[in-house]
Image (cartoon, rainbow, N blue to C red):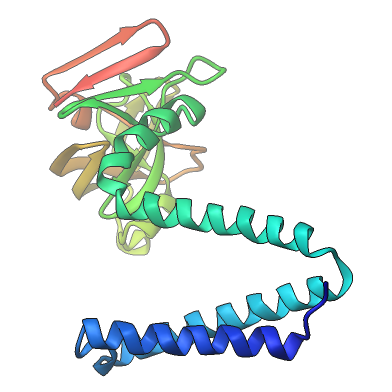
Length: 232
């Protein structure tokens, strides 16, 4: 069974138009906003493109095969929509799984309690938000404060070219010089601390360090097997 491309596209356009009229009746004023109209146009373009693709498939493939493909992709799209609609309920499960697959991603065990998994080198890495930007740290209890590489510092909004690199700092790898800074906010999982002392390293440093100026402000920190547990 084969259908013409124009016929399929025409059917889709008719259905889209009917859907728009129906939604406009149920939700008056929805199409008054420019952003909503743009979104609708994009959705229409995607649907028409999909319809054209289906029509081309119908000209060269059996109808049953095409219908099966449409149902599979439609099911995936529906799953994405449902997942987005119930994100608040799904998010804890996603974070839990992600914490096991990606050790640097903090896993929220319960409010104020965050777990980090050791990587293959037995180091604890943590992806945190610094001033709203994602930064990957190595957790270093030998570092006196939070140490940022110049690249990470620049990304979080610090003007590294205006800093004075005259402050000695100590890490597990030795002593170097850096510039003292105050970090507005660091968020690790659901643990957020404001006004954290830190410095920007003058020399080359492979990775930013999450040091004691952050860790000492927590109420607890312990290692359980291959996990580090941080408590707000």
